[in-house]
Length: 622
Image (cartoon, rainbow, N blue to C red; front, side):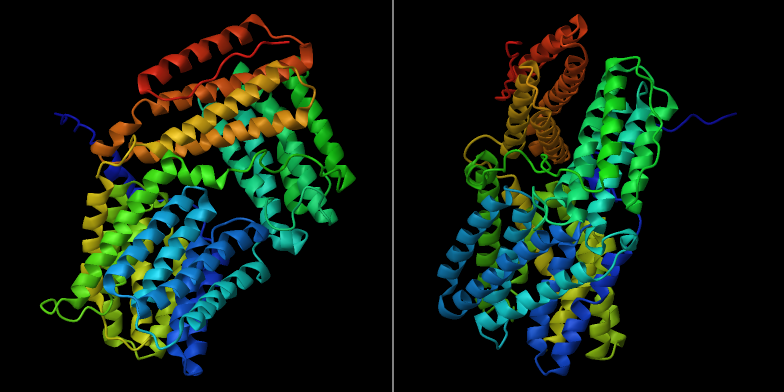
């Protein structure tokens, strides 16, 4: 007699997110850089008799290591350097404020910094990292008892971050010897675009086509960012730079044709994907493509694919080509609009409240006679900064992960501290923790555990007693503060970040549709508008997924937004299919126009239901 099957257990989104772990190969290059960053810096400072400066440099190297993600060397200059400059400024300001003002003015100053840093965090990933380091370093400067002056601390902080950045620029990575050493990250990013085109072609006519098209968008976004680093300019100076720009530009019409084929939905022959795969291999190996198999030319999208392959082969064979193509975003995001928009205002207020409240409570405890000694009061506001950041996941998820990771890390360190010799054993522990950070970033709890071990080791090397219990207490108190502030009502409507992303995606879709139906012959502008439309949609999708994984009290503010993003996505896909068909025949079929009208009607209905201003209208076709 068989037992009845147990019902499947469905976890709530906020808990499922907390248990989710990113997958992928071990980033051995980043692991090597992490091992050579904080630990050696600390060792050199201890040998020189300046252990406290080594602690500051090691903290900067640790924070830079958290930002040391896969990508191009050139882009890492901005990704690591800008937050380091903000951190040094925060350390300088925090040090002098902590030395010269009282508890109440200091709390007000830190609250103002929180408002500013929260606003700029809405600008983008690099700005978010800069805002985080500004606040963390200002809290450390105000509260960490170090003998050095503010300017010396700031120089030590810059030196620590500069050391990791130098390792990122100088050390080779796997596969970097296939061509110009400087462009291994860019080369791999462009090759991934061609692979993503091939995978989309293989998925045409199947249920996996939508996911493959989304993967192609992500690959194009990553390549665009990789080519956007310093000195990679529109008119590139070296043959290697010109070649990479030309290879990326040649992938844009291929991506367009593959998207149009996915929209049509008729399966294509297997040989259609062989050409993009050979192009991917040519990019990685820095070599010529050789002969490419031609796909059938029986339909407009297939003819567009064949033409795009021919143009790509010509661009590869020229070895450099004309890089005067749109490899950057068409319009840079306006920082002031992002800061003072709905998303920036809401996030800035929450960061200011969390950072200011935690700083005030920490200083009250620090000066309270009944509480006892509270030397590490800066831990509370510094922890709150990481907890309040939506970059790290939904609020409930990151609070759970932070609490669990801190407890685990503190217990591990207590065990290590009982047996390791000092200071050499602690320095080795710092080096090991630095090496583990690139792997631990796959899950916030694991990252928290590793960072907790590293920070506690630094505190002891700096001359303070073991503080595992204090670290746990500070973290749990910060979790409570952030949970309370995260659910407080704010002026204006909730979900400002999601609404702003959707509005941007709607505007980009409108611009792309107007250009295509206007029958302009400028394909470079069209490809740029298409990239902007898909990129803003991906950003909106990410913001919606984050909002939907919050606790129900917060998740309800994102109701209906996922449906709007889905309609916008189908609209941009249809616009791409229209562009390819217009290139081939000069007119649209009834299927194209009917689909556009249907999607615009659906968008209007969904917009009214959700109460959002995401308007796209049918332009007058020429």
